[in-house]
Image (cartoon, rainbow, N blue to C red):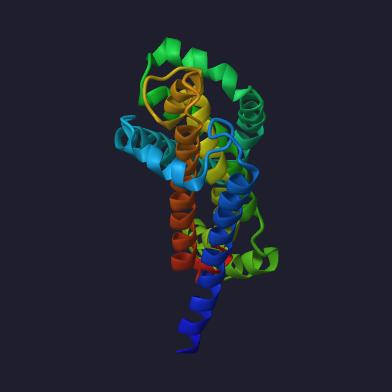
Length: 254
């Protein structure tokens, strides 16, 4: 019962804070009489969902780009971290190259991806992947290297195999580092997908924002921003649930 009351208090404060922001937004717009094309009210923003902007389809496209790019980054980042940890020579050879490639401005990659892959979800997913790959790689590799050296010496003395050392000591110890990198990568994945849609796209919430900007439909722009935020929050929540499942904590951070 105490646990339930703690959860109610914790999430109750979260809901109240968000509602407070919406109320302040509404009061400020109403009292200041700000024109809708400058700052729409929350009500006007919600009513924009009734406009024929293909909200469901565009939200789906952006979500696929964000989740797809993020999933690819997690798989590639973790895999490369494992390879670098197991084969030190490969790390010395290729890590500088990986870092150098990630120094390329991701906005500059957009036109190249479009030339190579044409328009569509694919190029935007790759931009999302490229922008959130490095944090996952670096945090996972750091976690693998932070294993207690005394403990490693002990299990080696007991003739543990390399696989046993990895699965029993290195991998469990690296998970907190990995989830830290995954949380940071959520924000980058959303930003990458939207950057791709801004550069050149014919669908998605970023594309929709560019379209309604021409007609000064600020309420629709605000709604698109809220939906983009919701996609990021859902992805972040999934990461927290996975962290709670594997480590026994995580959702308390919301």
